[in-house]
Amino acid sequence: MENLNDSKTLAIRIAQILDKKKAQQLRVLKVQDLTVLTDYFVIASGTSTTQVASLADEVQFQLSQEGVEPYHTEGFDSKNWILLDYSGVIVHVFVPGTRTYYDLEHLWADAETVDVSAWLEEEPRDGGAQ
Image 1: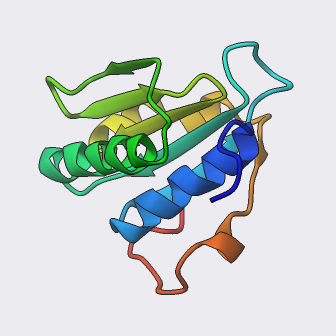
Image 2: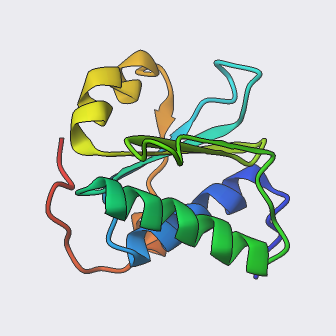
């Protein structure tokens, strides 16, 4: 595996993990020129709180196997919005209603959308268009 200390490489790896677990509406936003908080947001949806937790758990598990641990996590109690903070990459996994309500893509509309399609499986997903 490539160097996961590089934020873009880590964001792509996270997108691959989420895609393989059937995450919906997967987006990677480059925000490094807009905030000092992080370099990238990876945003995804699950169809239920169970799937949201499963998606977040899988990211943590797979990255842990590769020696990468989150600095902070939030939302595992409610499972409506789980945040995984990997410093250079912050992962947001939502149920659809919560994602619509907070609308991070609109709040960060000036961010560059990273096209990760070349690194993902080619099988189409429902809910991929916005």
